[in-house]
Image 1 (cartoon, rainbow, N blue to C red):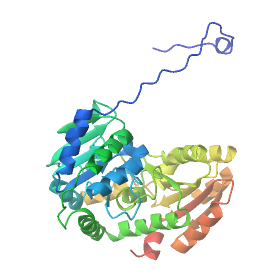
Image 2: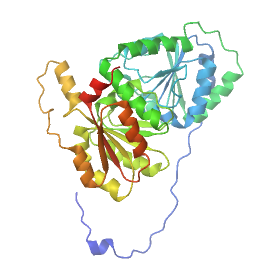
Image 3: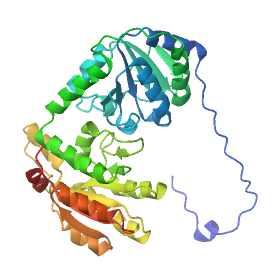
Image 4: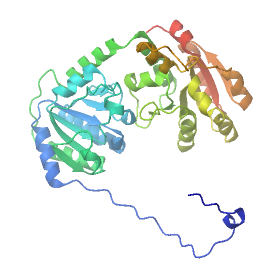
Length: 384
């Protein structure tokens, strides 16, 4: 059905409109019985493990306290990156789709999943149904229906993540913890992380260097990513320094063009923080005119354009499956000229040192900056 409202009606005065405050539902409180059951299971666990998702973003302090109390390894979804700081000895990362991390999850006798859907976009991006939970499962979620999806829990706690984790910590603080086996906790995490890093190819390690370079210059940066090669790599290799610092469209629907408008929105929401849009040449052509919006609104986002002259990720998967590439080698314009035409500052870099210099200049500007990185040149210049 289509209803058209004439313009004169839209702009006419209207009476009888009463504005009332919206009624917001209260956050559910955790059941005391469920909390007691969960605390018992965690207190008696020999190999506890935590899976945390974006629903726990407001519970970073409580999550860390509980993980350290239990000496439990912690795996984070993409939206939960930063809940444990990078370098924390219990941080596995976001590698739940890789064999080494999956083996660790299977070894856990009690798993606490908090604020996570346990969906394939974070736990099975290779679509082989290889992620399995064999131990007891405790789930915390504010959505009662979500608790029963994908993996049915032994204990279901309908509650806000922060409140539930805090309550569990209080209960566990009053109880003695069993001695953990020496190969669990931080020691086991270190072994898994080393194995995962050794499994990465040269291109992935080079892209990690790319992201690490950004962080070295802009430690409080928000990176809004599109569906592009270094974002796919970063979902595995990058540990964000803080929550709400890494988000992208390469999980779920995998939309192209999301990165630029998302970065503009992030900068408007957090003007005090530098914001980087990490996008490919294919993706940028979907929303390229938004550069004009950013210039007009004086939103100084930094666009890092990863140029592999086409839909490089799709091309790679086609080749890997012995499919003749089709529709992936697209025409690529001169992006720096286009960016300047929109009123942006634009440049091209091939090395970490050049990228550092450009980022240092870009963060001081009050107009958008577009920095093009040609994939082949970066790989040639930057060894793993």
